[in-house]
Image 1 (tube, rainbow, N blue to C red):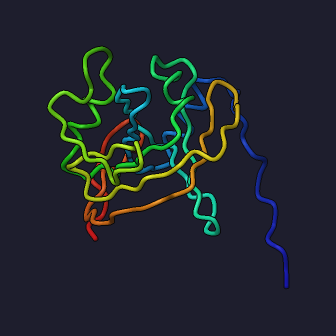
Image 2: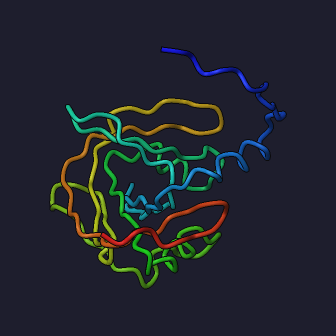
Amino acid sequence: KEKGRTVGVMAHQEINPSSFRSLMSGWITGIAIVTSEVAGQRVGIVCNSLTSVSLDPVLVSWCVDKKIASFPLWKEASEWSVNFVDAEQEHLVHKFTAHGGDRFAGVDVIAPSAEHPALALASAKTYFTARTVARHEAGDHVIIVGEVLSFTDGITRPLTFFRGKFLPGPTA
């Protein structure tokens, strides 16, 4: 077989936090809200860094910024739930990204099982619970790896994030 030909030289742009954030905004992601209860305190954070890691055992990862106020709680969270956000639930994203106030005010939650402290959002059509199995320092974030314990799957149209905008995803 004949190789393709070289048609140019790659353009390079200086990498800094702003240019890298702009670059990554071109990667469409789903939106989730990670929730838990740590030392009697409910904690929730919007996440678009969710990644499937392994099938055996079933592992996922997500990242948390070390600079956020709730970081000390996430550092201690042994179990948590990942709640997929439906296209009609953008209001929850704004609630869980707001600074100050009780993010859970007016938000119903359920405990997926009596023996696990992870809280799930009652309005989430899809959520799973996980137990933290590892934490890895990675620059200004910590990567949290969890083993999935249980799940409910019912989302029909996810909320996505692309170029700084929320967009409804495809319909199932």
